[in-house]
Length: 158
Image (cartoon, rainbow, N blue to C red; front, side, top):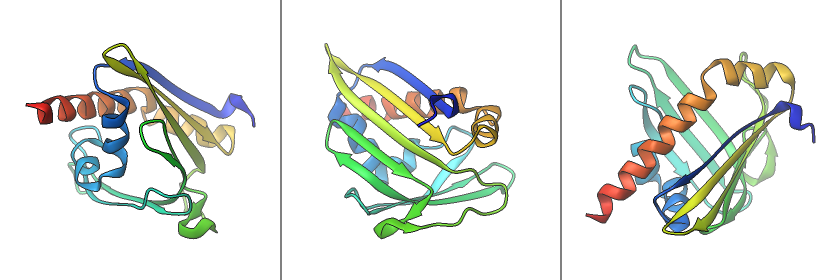
């Protein structure tokens, strides 16, 4: 593992670890927050078991479309969710398309007071992929998406 190719985001948020986890594994919830506005997640498929599918389709305001398919690596309710785009369902190797970069996402959820600590690590295959992801606005984008998840779950509470 080369941590030099990692991008990280960590925050304490005012929702539970179970709510954070549900936001990733419930596709109807995932579609409502996963992509920072003005982009939208129009399709999602999640089988939250190791070897299961993690698939999203993100659409931009000018007709851009980004489809990503990967493999769930770890799914522990209220504790951890992890996936990679280097494999598809059933741990089948998955070739990357032109312009794509390989990564593995591990997100840990930890209860803290009235909320939770959200810790995401995105490990990239190489420096070029990490730089591309960073230059796409990783920190701002993932931060905005997390804000959207918190807002969604807070709204659902009533």
